Image 1 (tube, rainbow, N blue to C red):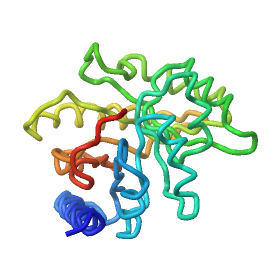
Image 2 (image 1 turned 90 degrees about the vertical axis):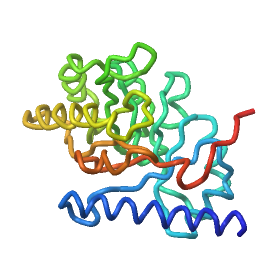
Image 3 (image 1 turned 45 degrees about the vertical axis):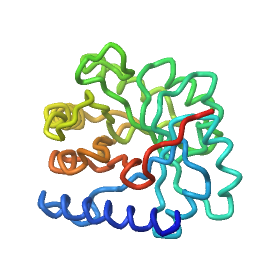
Image 4 (image 1 turned 180 degrees about the vertical axis):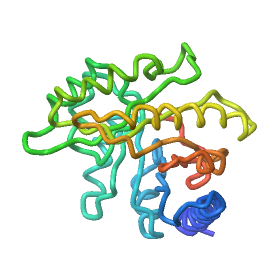
Length: 235
């Protein structure tokens, strides 16, 4: 089996998992977007996944995304940026991707808004650190209302939902309380009308716990290893 065949096989298996979990949760078959996490993978692997029907791809590093985009310009994926974003790297991402997943501070929001080309709108998610892990990025839950309020002054941004990275656990059920917490936060904040905010998305769940995430309302699951295998080390 060559690499293209391997990726196609893996992708089909993940697509089946997503569909089965979605239907088991009593949700429409198209309720969940599968996001293939392609960080550290070459453009050829992305092209192979696209040939097998995948369209949404997530990158963690701004400069890696910058370098991959020209190689895939003829068959452009629907890019997502899912990693922590530094202010000096915003220029590689703002206005260049369909969705930014991990914004978590007012100053960063302002910089992204400044970098989005005039006349366009950048959709984004707010990352929430529901477990209060000190080593992880993400807004504290108590800061979320004020951060969502800030979008009123940012006409080139639209907040379409929330994102979480739960504490690492080998047990898929270990992530459930954190998925539940994010969903409850989303539902609570979505009850309040805000300019430039429409909290319809929940980006949560990865290769090992996507079924748990979908059962708790995920609309985007971020899957890398189950599609591409173990990541290559960055140089």
